[in-house]
Length: 66
Image (tube, rainbow, N blue to C red):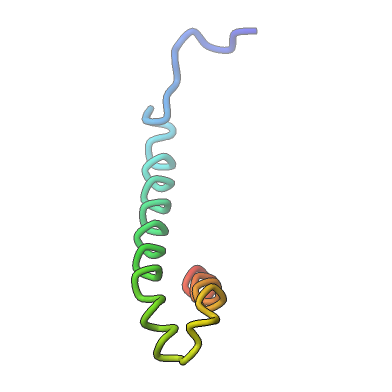
């Protein structure tokens, strides 16, 4: 069943704003996570909880991501 003969892409005028918004959202989250991963070891040392490093990273991701 063919609905349209025209090929519709993600950057067509009707989807352009949505596509750019999704790309920007994914890029922003990626940079945010990169920053958190970079500071997580020093944060764990300052909190004297290097043994809790995984939990600190998880909690900070949840707080910043909210």
